[in-house]
Image 1 (cartoon, rainbow, N blue to C red):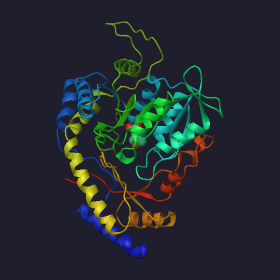
Image 2 (image 1 turned 120 degrees about the horizontal axis):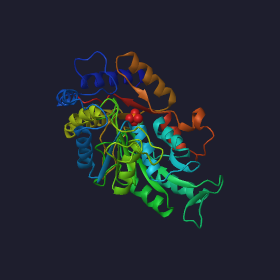
Image 3 (image 1 turned 90 degrees about the vertical axis):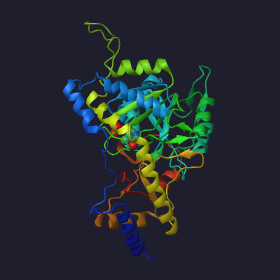
Length: 385
Ligand SMILES: *Cc1c(COP(=O)(O)O)cnc(C)c1O
């Protein structure tokens, strides 16, 4: 089939999944539950800011959904990742092993800590960090010293942290990554910003590492305008995160005493109200998105085009569906045709080491990352009422 003909067929199929719409966006929120009621409630009560019942309820709901012991409500996902690394002990001048194929927020959060990212290749199927690439990099470049920590032999810097990212909500091989990190005494923090509702061998993403972070930005599966959450099973880490997120204020009836440099990272009650109403609908969202993913998978299989999908044993939330084009030229043609014909599509991100802030960062060959960067396109994936 010629590519024009193929692209026409794809546009028709996608439009059929969202009937009655002239323009099909990539991902839009759906407010079908208690959103208005809960938000009005915060206004009526005057508790719109960082203290309120919805913030507490939000944290409880996140614990229920993830099975994690502690959740801390944070103002956005980027800051949740930043704070997760701080409480896990990431220090300035450390190195953090992460993906070149990720959204910028992952690497910005690393920069906020004063650490340097090192880019490890991803697996083609999960599009998340590759365990073999990770262990190859460490075998070749790292050494464990007498202080018990792992150091980069080339730079002399401590490799304290590993921050993989579950791309588009499809879980990566996190069990293998966790085992490698543990053998090198590297702390594992999960950027699970995109993967609320996704599980790996029955465990929710973000709960396998020492800490995980979610985003509730407007384009995510569940949104509260802007918001984030930090999760951990370690009660000391959770306490520290909450303390740091509220300006490190020591509790007292009236005194302003702050015992270290804190952050204003707490999620306001107004946003938490919206988040609670959305989280109540999560099972319903996931079912709906899975059904769309299955339709896409069947259709694109027929077209001979691979799609991004969960591995056996894991469950994706199918936040954003992705299809793999033949090559960069085919990808560009597809992007042009779909966007000119009322179907919004977007390429996967440019590799982080190509951006000016990170072009001096160490990386491995990144073969799979580059291969995917040239071919992967996201297609409309919103909840369908
Ligand atoms: C959305 C996202 C974030 C950050 O979330 P914000 O809430 O927008 O700050 C971080 N990492 C990844 C991979 C994301 O997709």
